[in-house]
Length: 124
Image (cartoon, rainbow, N blue to C red):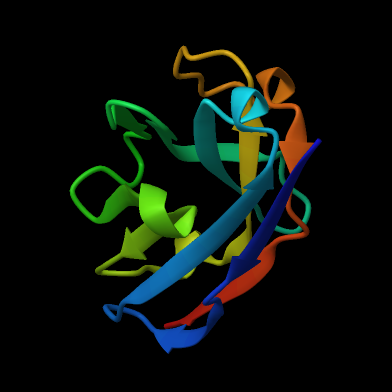
């Protein structure tokens, strides 16, 4: 069992920045990869970024490339999502998720454990 808790969301103006945090606990073999996904009202869940727990390999969605950065702090069991140059289209609930496989994935169905999410609202 893996537990994930997100924080850092809020209201920000377009062009601003936020850093989301995800604290991860539980079975280490079940959290080899951590991903960030987002879901806006009336839309499907969308991949944002992912990182491998060991090695630090990353992948980022084209829609946020150059603006969002994913990173981790193994000692603190934390994964971060730094979001810069925010747009109104980034408004969504952001979730972090864990999967046991060591392969990066952009598919939400391949993640086993999910956090409750944190709301990000970007005003234009």
